Length: 438
Ligand SMILES: *[C@@H]1O[C@H](CO)[C@@H](O)[C@H](O)[C@H]1NC(C)=O
Ligand SMILES: [Zn+2]
Image 1 (cartoon, helix red, strand yellow):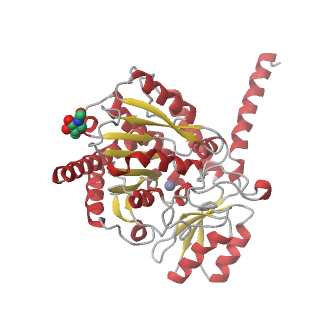
Image 2 (cartoon, rainbow, N blue to C red):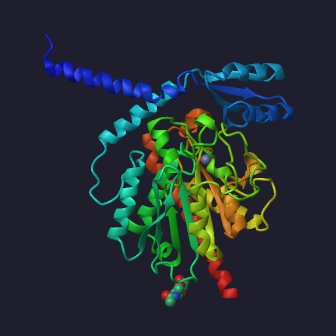
Image 3 (cartoon, rainbow, N blue to C red):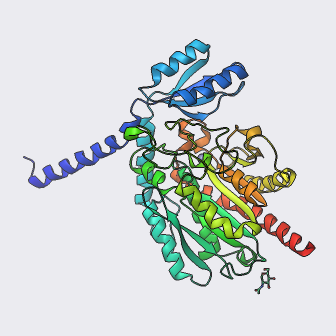
């Protein structure tokens, strides 16, 4: 006979089992397709399907380079019919992606359980920390290091979360002959591996300072979680959520969220989706969202000395610069040279099995895109603005590229910091040279 206590244990075990199942239920039956296009016409046709059917384009198909598209159970038939009509070839990469998500969750939970308590103050790099943990950490940094760390609130998210960021400066930003460097992560909710990279930068600028020049010569603004609502949603409900959590866009809230990286005022609406249900929906107008307004407002006082702006995304091992309409900024050559310096710094310490970073204009390397944050920063006055795409999960380019390998968290954070440092130093040197010439 089982004791009452054992019944209780079994009951609780069953409950937690079903909680996990329910959590990734959204993705039950979602299939990841590999799309092979023969020519540019087919490629454009497939990419435009994204404006008609709420499919999730992970990688854009080009002739000679297959694309990956995630499609829900409900939209599968319409999607496949369109491919058949156009004669586009495809194959199935993952029949039901819910299974991959359950595996990631188990591995991260196991890593979190195994970790040793840190002997010094700080957040560990063994797991991916949630909003509340990061928020409390930022507050604590402000309390512990009042001489050069200020915790500021940028404002509230759509759902009312306080969006905090750090200002790290030996002069509390009062010395305006110093360059400003801005780093941000998690503009896109599902790109979890980007969070440790901004947390690592904070660690090396505040807690474990080994390179003094970075603190003495530069004023830093770091916002680890730009899109907290989307980020939390990607933990609690929909792992591959990308947008913010704006509601009220359609009656009955059939579709939710604005793609924040299409919402900035940079060629807004020219290469993004006007379909609310799309993952690249650009919002009702440029800067319609509090999360993008925040970035604009916190940088406003510092635009004239914003030497470097970096928006960290994943995945693909890329350092991208503007513009998303294919035009090069006037300082395109310098953008490229500094981009290459950052990429080389990362490549020197990266894991051998990871690909080298690729550097270039976003359209040349990836795709056309309007309303991007780094394009806006470049246009608004930043000397150098970039989007990083951190390496993918185990070199995979499809859906799995967004997953997190617990073993890679610290390495991703460390190697990205090598690139950020190289960029910050070059940007600062150029900034001081300009001041000297004036
Ligand atoms: C402001 O910063 C510059 C560059 O680091 C430094 O040379 C200068 O002494 C600083 N000014 C003040 C008033 O601290
Ligand atoms: Zn992204």
